[in-house]
Picture (cartoon, rainbow, N blue to C red):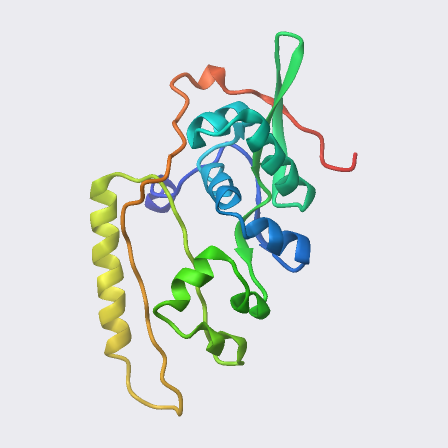
Length: 203
């Protein structure tokens, strides 16, 4: 196995590379911090409503409502099912690793854009100038975080040393910090993981 494969988080389900938040329903769904957290948790592994509820310490009925909403707008999918007594338990995963936002979303009330606006002028992102903004939350060891911090620092230095030119100034903003959000626990026994794949939506 290559170094790249060893250092890349391997999900236990398949998902697309990108999905666009190009509808009012998707943008509205992404405006809720709890839904954002649920989407981040299943980027480590597929999880059931019961598991998600335990991680976020919310009632199952509340989490089920948010999961159903995210599924309805195409941001979550049922990736596996398994029988628990007489009931069928569903395991959910994201439909895509990256969510792409239209430029007009920067003027809305999405929490991560609101945080960034406190230190950056994201209105400029609506222009034709090259611009990007992303925020990811993952569970990694402290040693990996320290290594990544150094890489980000070196990238910032590389940016600052670029030859000057053009008619527009660009800013580089990066941060890496620990959060207080719950994280997904790995299954201790892989045999506990459900194996029945869900049928594609609409089938």
